Each structure stands twice: as C-alpha cells, then as structure tokens.
Length: 327
Image (cartoon, rainbow, N blue to C red):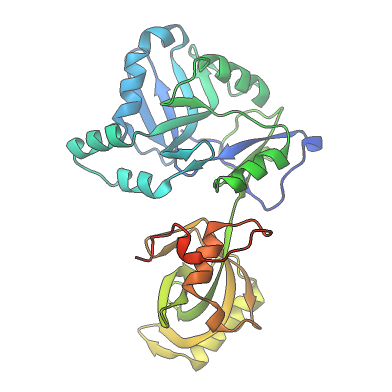
C-alpha cells in the first residue's frame, strides 16, 4: 500500500494555516490490516512484519469480539518500544527487527513488548476513510480505540505547537508532525498537508576523512586524547562548502583506495537523532565551524550535546550523565 508520507521541514506550520500537531515516534512505520479472518502488519516498504510482533497479533485475537463490528479495519501507525509517552527506543526496536528465531521473538515480545501507536484510520467497517478530513478521521479513530490499551494506542493531536514541542524536547522525543485539519489521506509526498519537524541533537565534531567512492565524511571526537569515530555524514552541506571540503581532502589528504585522510582540523555542527553504538543516527550537516579548534570536540561535550540540556541548566559533572554508548 502506498502510504501518506510527511515532508521534512525546519519550520512548524501554524495553527492559523489550519494545522494541528502530533508526536513523531521513532519506530517502524506500519499499516495494520485487521479482518475477521486475518491480522497483518505491513511496513511502509510493503515488508510483512506480522511474525516479528506476535504481541500485536495476540492482542487483536484476544479483542476480536469487541472489534468484530468494526472489521475490516485498517490503521496507520508506528510500531515502537516506548521509553515514555513521548519517546520511543529505536535501538531496542532495531535489535528486535533483526531477530530470526521465533523463540527469541516471543521472548522479547514478553520482556519488552512493542506498541502500535495508531495515528490514522484508512478503513473502518470495510468503508474507505481516506476521503474524509483528518479531524473527522481522528474522531473515528478515537472512538475505535475508546478503551485505553497499551498494545494498540491512539495518538492524540495538540492544537498548540509550543506545548507539544516543549514536551518533545523535555522527553527527548524524535520530533513532531504537523497535519492540516481538513486534509484527506493521500499517497506518498504529493501533498502539502503533513510535515515532520525533527527534534535534532546538534553535536560538535571534527572531520578526519573523505570517501570519494560515496561522498561521506568521517566524524570524530577526542576520547582520552585519542580520536574516536562516531559516524559518517554528507547530507545538507551547502554546495560551495561541500566542494571546498572535498578539494581540501583530495589535495592535502593521504589517499588510500579512494579514501582521503587528514589530521583533525575542520570542525562542524552536525544534527543527529542519537548515537547508536558508535554511529550517529540520521546525521546531517548543520554548518562548518572554521573558528573552532578540534580540541573542543570531546567525548565530554558530546555527552552534553546528546543529553539536550536546556540552555539555562549549568552542567557541573558530565560523568554523572547516563551515557554508555562509548563503553
């Protein structure tokens, strides 16, 4: 199924323009197709996820009698493992998604079950809901999921962007989705009705290499006076800056199989969602920092940047910050 996809933006559309707002969860986008004879979870790339999340299927079967009059039912949502109401644990979900053996999948389903966060309804009682306005679809969805559940949950909307953004920042959520109230459910990105705004962590790092084979720059920080690589990045760099960087590495760097390396000298602010293992998640350049010295790009500073402390909070001891990804 061709699902409706939000368009990335850095500006939050206003309520005066007809928008309301939802929490954006960091998980696997999925469609739940529920009929009287079958229950299926399908990813946005049409991959069958049903066997990976048996707890969702079990829930549906257990509640079948309550939902019978509403079937066939098709819900759009996000498969997540929640840390709190506004933040999902993508690394746990990613690990879950790699499991192959049913015995391991069943074990994880009981230990740390997933939740299907339903934010839209496409079909109810077999009737197509796509041509109904977003607000009317949300009313229907809320009625369908009227009894609070922790396996399939209704995603509410907010009318004030500042309220939801403050909560997203406080709980370190992935971001928010702005949705036009009168919009229909269309396909792909051929619309001007859904926009996603990421709650980026902006980290400080230096660049140590350029790979001419794929265009990526390697990002690092100092950890115990040693260079510690934290991922690769190439997106969102302005064309002129990108050209200058490539030229510098290719003219001054040491070459080996298309990889050009230089000692730490060039620093940058990089937007990312998190650090998973030793790899930045969805990194993209914010801007280069020619006046910042590489010695300022440290693991200690990285901890602070990833923790997303409000600007007025004074940090006295970064060793007390919970952060174990470099260990």
